[in-house]
Length: 213
Image 1: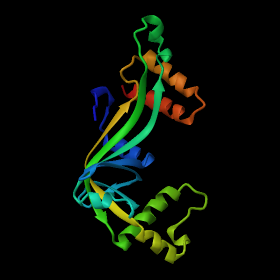
Image 2 (image 1 turned 90 degrees about the horizontal axis):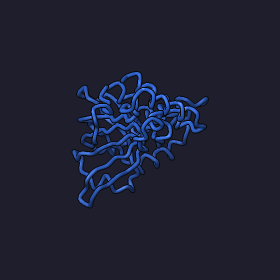
Image 3 (image 1 turned 90 degrees about the vertical axis):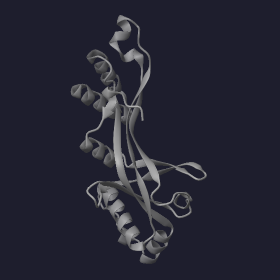
Image 4 (image 1 turned 60 degrees about the vertical axis):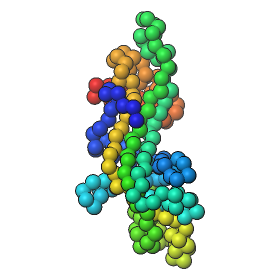
């Protein structure tokens, strides 16, 4: 990923928090049949050796687990908010007109080796952990044991689990850091005035990036 210095984000705590907030990843790999890509919610955890690991599962009918042997390198891409940025929002447009449209976004790329898991106990622990994490905000959280045991066994037999031992994790926060303070303020004001929640989320990120700069 191309990461100019002013857009580079390498603070481990920021990257980990981002993955937790935006867990749906695109998992990309080169298989014998070509490039494969799947959209999979992942959970970031501490690895056994002190590093990090990403865990998730796919449908057994998905041929990815057959095309990629354990140990294959994969790339997990986590996409956060993204927004079109109009040059009309820059005060500098009125001063000299030397401005163009762009796109703001925040992403994390995590690389590592994948290992497949078919063990029922491993899979049950994984789906329970994923469920507990994502149901935590519900008024009455659903739990795996709420479903009939026979049904859960059928569901577990229909998936394949995996973990990715992370070897590198990098982020790109393209949030108008290359603009002057007045232009950044114009971007924040325009985004904050939008009725779209994603635009307002981006406004917060641009404002924070400006303070960091």
